[in-house]
Length: 134
Image (cartoon, rainbow, N blue to C red; front, side, top):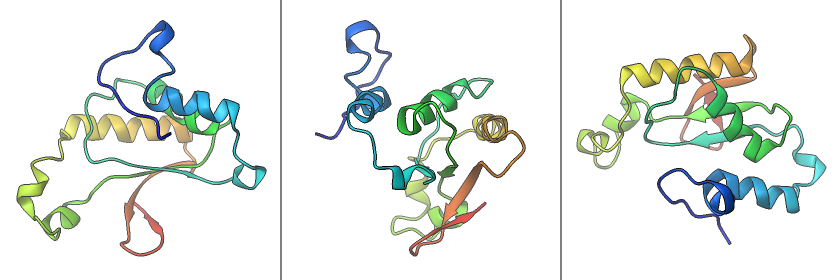
């Protein structure tokens, strides 16, 4: 079954029941075939709450999907043009919370994770069959 999400922090027996920690437990039991070893992890989301001051949260999230190794990471977040040109336009953008401060923190976490390389990048979806770099 698809791992569900439940708001809040989970500890002890509940830690591996929800969200990315559930994915981590499932992938530990049922690893992906080796052909996916070099595949990038592409994450898309449309809201961003507090991301902290370092990349610890990002490393934990990536570890849930990629194991202990570092995998190429691509984060897709809607651009202003995409929100404006979307079916619902600007009113839909009201449901995409992300302060400038959090956007800067995310950019810093991505730079820390990538170590100055292209290992991690913010990307925009090109609307076709691929992702384009930032």
